[in-house]
Length: 131
Image 1 (cartoon, rainbow, N blue to C red):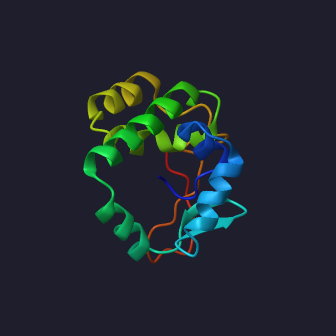
Image 2 (image 1 turned 120 degrees about the vertical axis):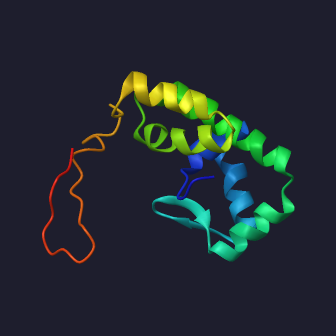
């Protein structure tokens, strides 16, 4: 799960309601945190614990579900456009990731695209837009 994840996205991918996701967050508190941006792990230690106790097959299946969900929405949803690559890669679908990047280029669902964001070089005081 990429952080922060929208509660509505988690509910859709899990095939449940947002109230069930809220209960999950409550049950796993303080390990999961709900903020105005979404839900995420409280720290890297808890995230590593989850990875240690979740079977690798189940984790791959979760990435598959997220990849499928985001793939269907990548042209209209900025969250899907931003997170699709991570889930395709973690689901072992690297070839599909490469195909999407080569065929589609910069995601259109991200308002300013990836190129428009100013980048700062380490130690630099000025910003420049690369693209």
